[in-house]
Length: 184
Image (cartoon, rainbow, N blue to C red; front, side, top):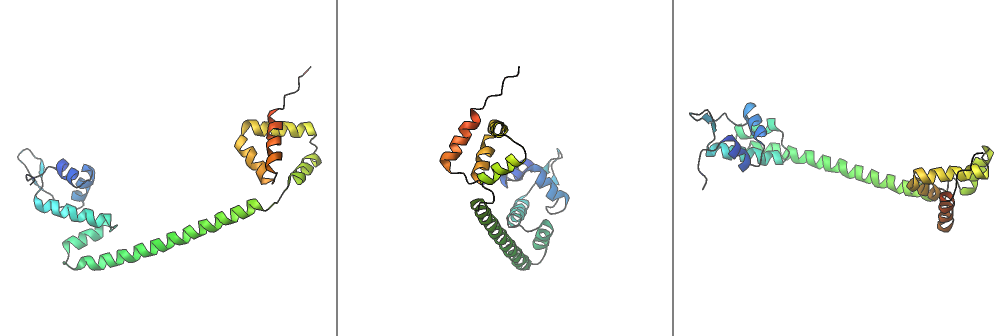
């Protein structure tokens, strides 16, 4: 059996709270101000311990502090209405989370579908690059820079163009083999 009374630090530790939280509960009147020792230390009783444990139980259930005070200071059956309301809030929150989870799943599914649907092919990309005036050497330099500065993204880009794995490997090796032309 524990020796009473408890100091603020020991009470906080026993209820697995920070000292600051316990003092906050005291400052807002959720936990009554304790008596003081001759050395002006707070001295908590077994009633304080029990009240703090009840506060922690309701807080862990997500009940707001204002409502915890109403439960603890009100009629004995007052907790039931608050807890039923909290259950409804939780049910609504769970439903919203399920809807968000489904939306994420739909978006991921669409993302996979978009990745598997060729919007642009290697041939289309090469034609665009040539139409923009790039030569074979320019394209080689472009791939080399891409491979050097962002290899993972280069891989993803080539996959996006739906290039077969063997060709993709060859392009990346070709990109790594590029050498800067010597200036005269």
